[in-house]
Image (spheres, rainbow, N blue to C red):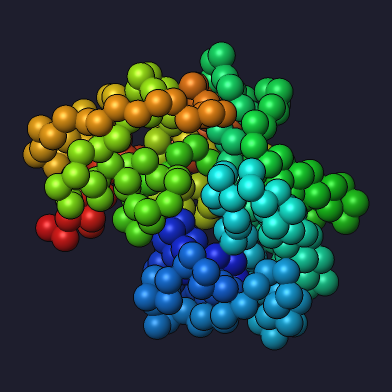
Length: 301
């Protein structure tokens, strides 16, 4: 299979590349290397340095891919608040360019979206048809990109798939940005600094190991289209997450406390029954096992 992975030098995208190469697929990566890293792309994949807004059409004309895993994104919520025009340009207009290139060549798209940022504050596990209440432009842009994808499915009869991920963590996650509390906590512990908890630490998220996120993307290849939550279906508070990280890291360092951050969700919970029923996908790694793998990577042990 000929595949393009946009954002394939980044965190989740590079793991998708690894999985495709393990299947002996022909893999092309489109990444502008602003946040992605060249060293994340194996030699067996071909790296095309470029931007989805300007370089997608030329790449698709050259490669004529059968599938595109669309993982390129502006993923920093703070940037989306400060520069909503830039966020929309990358996440909405960039996705339209991918859709148009895919339409020209009959390419199937598997799109990496977000659950928490789209559903907003949850009062229980949110199913795919739950109200969408983004609280930041990032979630709004991802939702708009999803709607373009579903419009193309209706208009052109394509079978593009949307995956709404929970909080994905694992090796190669950037510990220096806003997202990725697992990587941030572990990096501070490795460096000998106290982890910082904002608010009372009761905020909950659904933490999904990156290999499970990749498995869902591969399962989506057999789908005729649709939107699926991809998470564990289990909520974990920030305080509990830190306790488990301390366990795998062998650390007793106490956390620092800081004021709550404006706009931060208190509860994010996803219903994953549709992915189980229609994709045949379920997460294979529990939280402790995934955290142990991630700590081995971050600590170099």
